[in-house]
Length: 322
Image 1 (cartoon, rainbow, N blue to C red):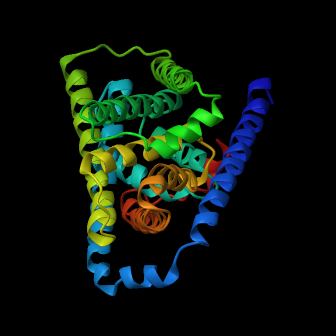
Image 2 (image 1 turned 135 degrees about the vertical axis):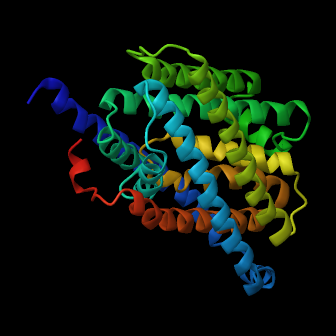
Image 3 (image 1 turned 30 degrees about the vertical axis):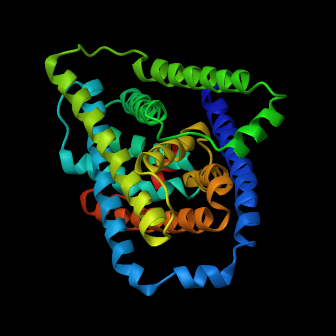
């Protein structure tokens, strides 16, 4: 066994362990809010009449995940240099979604590599397509959040700013600048990994693939942001802005890529939502809302497994060796 081969499992193990530790810490934070929910008030808000809406939201999630799958296909075709079977690629993406929960997001990536290489692309191209997909997600996400901030639709509460000021020794601007530097380095890392050994020409066809990917990502963030907005606004009656929730969803979704070893971003997304919303709306509604939203995405991913298996009937067991 070569040195590289021996290092990879150790590196993967470290990332997974760190991801679990961060998830556990975030889940503990969420747990403290969950146990303090006013159950009587919660029972008055929860209703069986929500079930048809929740089923609709799950269906929307399934469709929007197919948007992401199509966007990944464009990146894979761009790097591979030729067209790939549409439904086969969508099947790979949707089938492997469930594996981000067990054991972590890394297994979702490993499964995609395993199945996609069977279609012809090299392992290097499949890995690059993953990183390039993240680069575009982050860039589109930043545009959405910056537009919301610029138009005054998204801002941090005074209480949260005070906590950041205490944490950073009063240097809020320095703290913010540090976050921006970290984000820029993360984007640069993913971009370098995505374009490593890149040989495809920037043809008009590839340019169209990039444009289509960008549009699909915009539709995904807006679509899922709309679902989350209806959960908070219509179901729970929170007086919250649409663009604020779209930005909130965008931030929480991208948070999964900061901690790649965290299983499905569980705990991370809930922590971000509660931390941002509880100072404004109190602890109960944000906690209930994000738990409902988590149920929607988990059930959606569970439904995607049999749908994807229609187009990708192979088992996953061999992928664990990658």
